[in-house]
Image (cartoon, rainbow, N blue to C red):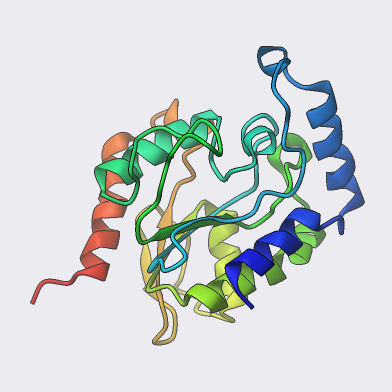
Length: 222
């Protein structure tokens, strides 16, 4: 199994009737600002360096972001906050992410999501997340990352479920860091959604601190 095979399976997936209907309706109706664009309208595969040591897990595609562009965190406000931070930390070749052919490359980092289809109201159901979990499991098995960054509580809980990690002391909090049974490090961050960034719950400095911590875990000082 390789990432190319997993991504092909993700793109072809139609396991969740509610999500299939929603993502395709959004792609057909479109937002007025993007009326002249062809929407992706399918599950969104992972994106990044196939040799990455850092694995980022988000929530799910935005209806007019990744569901339009077909690439994780591309074409919406969350990506406009995420990719500049990755660029500053040296994980991205440029600070912008607008389309699948914009030239963006990721270095030592791979981005996936807990759910691969845009959900109504940005809320996938537990059953829908369970349907998507095998894809995330396989990506993690292939990459064997050293550090996992969970963007938001749902991603954090999904990663704990995959690694069968149970520790009552492990609570989601921004910049909280845990070691998964001699496996990868798990770092939490608030999701870079507008709900968090515009209210100041997640600031640029707070987000940069997460990526600095990731760098420190990858390259610990002697």
